[in-house]
Image 1 (cartoon, each protein chain N blue to C red):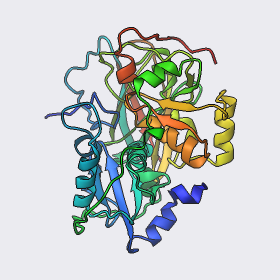
Image 2: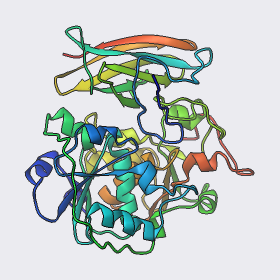
Image 3: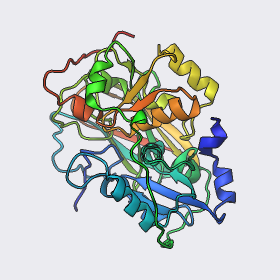
Image 4: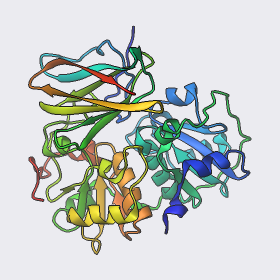
Length: 280
Length: 107
């Protein structure tokens, strides 16, 4: 796996806006950015209302994913290029989700919406419609998705990477610093977790760092490439970004994203919690 | 004026000069202000909060009026704005709860 297999540059994207078989998809938690102006021809996916189950705390199921992609006009053999705001957090989440349901040809736009805007590339507010398809998803590939029991079993056994900010890791904050802090769960982190904030994998313009820089970052932090790894954050989207760096860019073989993340773990009764800067 | 605060998500909430309902300034440290260029507000800037060691902490996009806001822990912070027309940054020290005003100029 090389960078070119999983990422496209903004230059490439602009040159391929009208290329048949390439579908640009903007993924955000708040789609008002898309509505105000998006990459020409891109369709939108609303992370909150379209990728999450409306009642239970879980994803849309396989049939729901098929219905969603069919409605967006995405076919099984399309090359899907995902991008979004927040340094591609939700686009990376969607990328992981596409992989979870077995879509092979999916890539991220390196730098996402931020790089596109900082470059001054074109945006369009025109409505985009694509002809409905009949999309067929596979069963979830749980080789890349971790659940809470295996996270508890991974303490002191696997690499646990907490990708939140240091203040969230230590328990000082319960959410990223641009959000209000009133939350139900306890503060802290999973014992034995190593704190490598997701942002260390990204440049200021939102692009991913080079493979050499990433390898050095994670090995210096104490992540053992020979061991299985579980990444988590607060709700699983920042850890999708790190999952992408470890599994897709660096090619570490066994990396899972724990999408339950701290909002689940920090609310569990009877599990160990560590506070402070950690042992690293 | 109504303001949406996303508390179960991680995305950037709408940035407004007015604080959202439910924010207790007696408890929370809020860093807020405007991005400007030549005195005019700059909307659509990527505003990054960096900690005392220069490490990234959070990022929001400034509103059409140039407004941004962060909820932070006590400490010395750098607020850095990126825009296609230029970049700029400023530092602020927040010792305790309340609204700490921050002004960032890009050029």
